[in-house]
Amino acid sequence: MTLTPKQKEYINNAPNFDDDMIERLQDPEFQKGWLELTLEEFLQDGNVNEFTRCLTYVVKARVKNANRGEISRLAKELNLDRSNLSEIVNGNKQPRLETAFKLLNGLGYKYDIKLKLA
Image 1 (cartoon, rainbow, N blue to C red):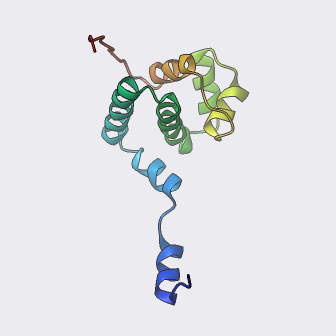
Image 2: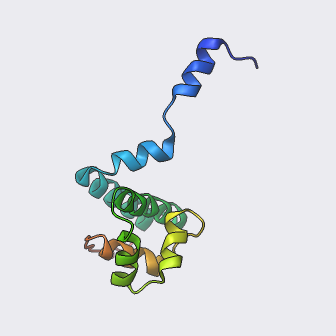
Image 3: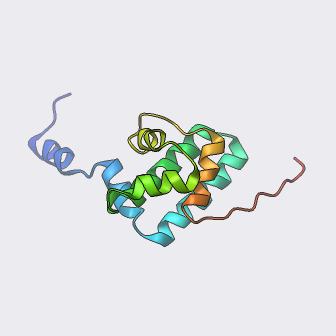
């Protein structure tokens, strides 16, 4: 398939998903809503990979504009190895579920999970 010049221009000017999502996640209300939605979806479908991927975007958004010590501060607060947290933020490592819930707390969120009979 050959693209027209107009199609090529459109593709070249399209926003990068990662950059766009991290920018959107700078808004605290959007961030909270997105985390609530992804946590709810995780509890329904059990897709831990999607939940932790979404949480990683929030962590990236938080440390993006922060000073260089933000990863160190967050790692210390969560009792995580700084290099481990850096690998998560850089997308080189997916957090375990236990770490994901620590991250939620470290980001200032509280959660309430209720069990229902299926």
